[in-house]
Length: 128
Ligand SMILES: [Zn+2]
Image (cartoon, rainbow, N blue to C red; front, side, top):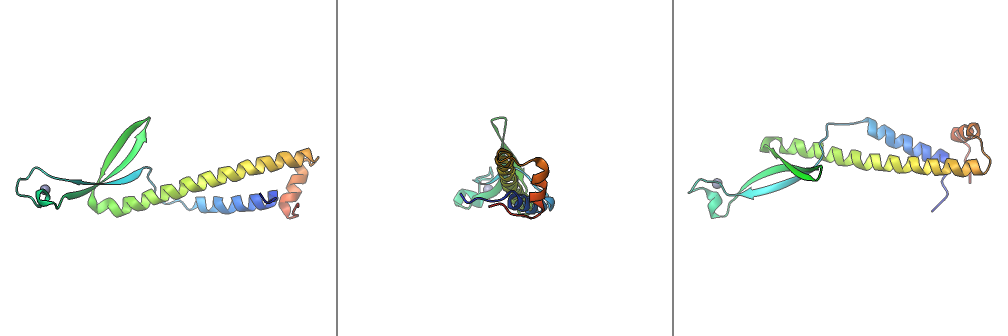
């Protein structure tokens, strides 16, 4: 892995935090399409054209939960779900950067840098 300075890591993290700041409505889970037949005898669903419906599924303490999503809300719920995925990925990335910063801090400390020197580093000077 390339050596990245703490300054660069912090800049990267700040950029991600700004992205995180622009939060839109979100919902956890995954959307599943269900094709089913109804109880009406002569309905088209019994001739192959099954009824389509959508459920939002997620696990709660190991149990699967499914919420019925009305068709007219489907598109919106999909957007909320996409937003949740985006946030989840961002959280993971920011956390990983924070870990790298902690490791970098420890490394700097070992090379006898004091916390106040670290602040100087953040100010601009790059370490190689
Ligand atoms: Zn039907």
